[in-house]
Each structure stands twice: as C-alpha cells, then as structure tokens.
Length: 101
Image (tube, rainbow, N blue to C red):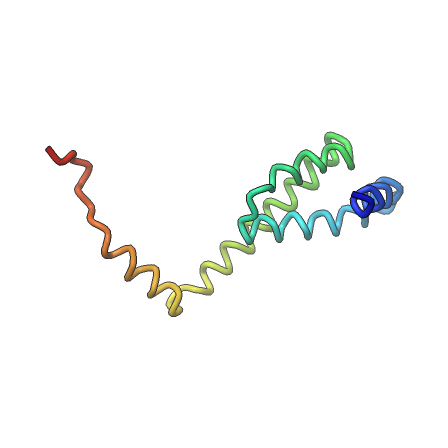
C-alpha cells in the first residue's frame, strides 16, 4: 500500500506528463496478458490524473494494447500454437443451431 501511495504522489506531482508513461505501460501489459482486474486501472486513472486526462491515458493504453495484441496474434499465425488450437477446435461438434430432441 505504501508503494502505491508513493507512486500515486509521484505521478500527481509530475507536471511533465511522464508520470503517465509507467501507468500506460502497466495498463497495456495487463490488457495484453488478459489480467482480470483491468477495470481498476481505469478507476485509478480517473483518481490519479483527473477525469479528462484519465480518459485520454486509458484510451491511449487500450488502443496501444489492442494493436499489440493484434500483431502478436497475427505473428502466431502458422505457428505450432495455432495448429494446436485449430486441432482442438476442429473436434468440437457444430449442430447448426438446432436443439437435440
């Protein structure tokens, strides 16, 4: 808790805007690895940076994380991981939306 308080005070006291950089990087990393608590980052951005600057910081982090995730997924195309997933999904039965009676 002391580390979070110290970091928050450092970010608030930073007038150059570089305090947002560690926040954006941490938020992007949390989104890319699918960390379940990313909503906490959005609330924290509003509390630390204020409403409008917090919205801008979150929008930048989410946009960059989406781009990173897209390029990682595209880079994995044709890899052994993709073949493994495709093999597992091909075994699923698709019933065409009809219920079994």
